[in-house]
Image (cartoon, rainbow, N blue to C red; front, side, top):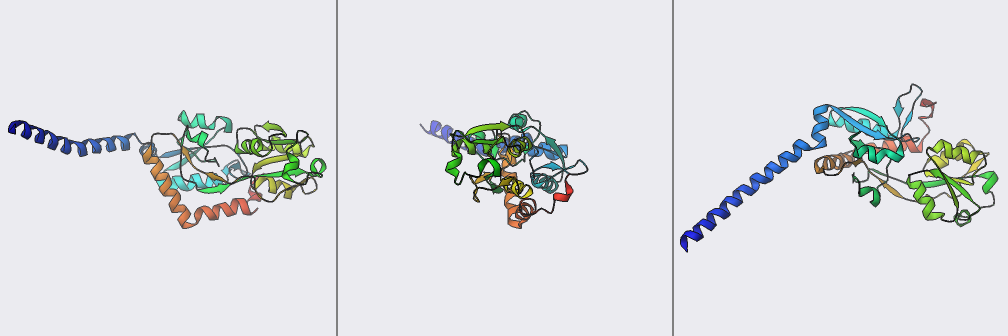
Length: 274
């Protein structure tokens, strides 16, 4: 029995010594395959987004500016690479990420369970919410949110967004008209073909301020409170860890709060756009 015991002990020792080596090889392979490593070797961070005031829009020179553009540029700068902006239609933005058209999706995307089935989300770097603006001509007699939940009421929003989800949740009985872009939905409202428009705050309140004779904010509070995260392809814990660590850093500095205040709480940037 003694030789067998010695053999088993030797085998156990060999396995114990091999395990750390195997783990180290696995970690090294993951690092080599990480998108973070590829980004740094390439020297370029590709960021996907769609235009949505004030998240991302073109200035008078045709360059992209906005809250998410600031976030993308700061992330790339801190990583030591340059940023390549990849404007992408919202309805196809997750498929484009999965297809490798860009590395990160930094575009005001709310963290949702159905989306998390397809992508990794970072921890939230800010919170947003859906709000509503209404037509003075069409909705003057609608006094409460419940009044808008009626088959005779038409509410417009951008398709494929959490605004559409908010419509389905808060106004299931209302007639819904969905558009590819916010300006199309707003035109429907301003032309008198809709009672209200739902979108991410602060856009509805900004529209009411720009068109006080035609529009008003029926309720001050947001319809939702949504965490927003940076999205990336699944299977890359190295990149996810870096993004989360970076978010904690910029929040701790107060940088993200300052940028949010500039873009969402002031109109100081208005003269930069057409």
